Length: 180
Image (cartoon, rainbow, N blue to C red):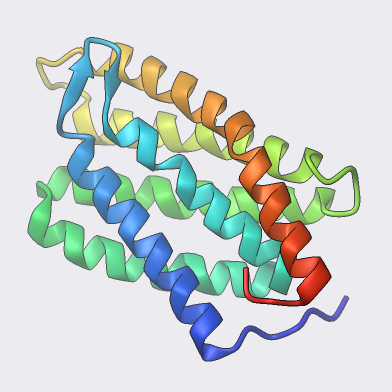
């Protein structure tokens, strides 16, 4: 299937959004809300939204492009602003989960509008949570397992909550062919 190519501004907005989401999540994951949750759990699901909007509008190749460039920008900034272990865990978890998200979304793109983003985000969130928390905090004297469970719960809740913005943005794009 042929997809439209994003213009430079559309691609730039997507990459900037991805970089900001990952960078802010890498910083916010260091701050606990309670024994079950860190602030990073609230911001990170927006990375899946960015990927899925690009995937829907421009196809999986452009979504991978945004994920790779966003990854590079975010990891470089995170290496300066976050501890190295968190930056490395974030990079590994991000790449694995984004590639899974893109693949699952693409396989389900022709089903009901909500199925692809919901299934892709849910599966990618499980992978991301497992990889990130086990690499970033395993062996640390912190309640990282409960943080991981809380993080996953918030990511799954956010997957449902972000369906409305996804629908509104893809509907707008489909009607006006405007940037998503």
